[in-house]
Image 1: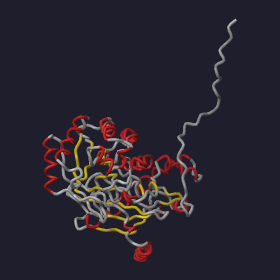
Image 2: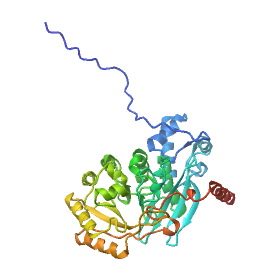
Image 3: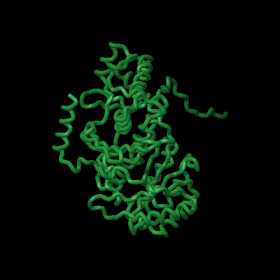
Image 4: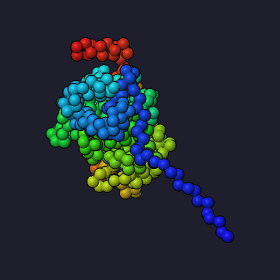
Length: 402
């Protein structure tokens, strides 16, 4: 007689379908910062504070609207939340902004902010106004780990990744400064975001993804993914995930077309070479002629700016069939920099070869140079000023606010 197969019995019992929210770390004062939490985490934060689920769901929706649509940081101003609930919230939660240590405005209208986190780390963000758009350049890390030789930010050591709230906080602060609340899609100055500030976004993938999902959420900041660009130096293993899980425009810091030169100026090239990088660009989800990949190319005198370099750049773009445009960036000098900027004539000659092959190659006008806010210049002003002087500035600002 054949024995019955010993198939495992299904395990009885309830299977909880609720996704697990991330553990929330209270601030030094014991309160939870709501800025940067996903909708689920916001609701769970309320439930963990003993609000019953139905109530938590309603309050989370209201709070989300006040935080991201209205820019409100004070619970007592949230008019559809009861007077008794407002102090209950204020006791347990906070809606923060990064602390502004210094704000500078360039002669061309570019603004740069030096920000400080709760744990005393300094980082920067930059706003670049144009006639038809306003672009916020957002940092993803304190410092940078890549050591690109032409970049002043790259001379800093990496201190830590920025949290989602610290990344979203930069957008909120810019909206505050520009007076752009309540949030609306039309007529605003802040129209575009580039993840091109301090740090390599793809080395802080989860936090950058979670922050940008909040920025793109239609119920709040509602910035279209077509108006957001993530810039990478070529962290190849994360590029496909960035396309699938974030879906924003991709910019790649190419800067050279030969292994020897790129190894020197973008050391990450020794890990992920040009061919591997360009193949990852060809495979990037969503890239097409309407959503081209941008190649950033800093113009360095006698290093990467020859006619041969331009022709090789064209050959590579054609070989990998890339829907691409090339941003030619005049090198922004800084004290001790090992390079000089290509001459305007050389940039023009390089540009004409790329244009001649049918590839868009605008030369970027340097912005904010006088306040060290131009491309590659971000290196926290804190390193140039003594901590005592910065603390004094912060105290004076506090006193002025009363």
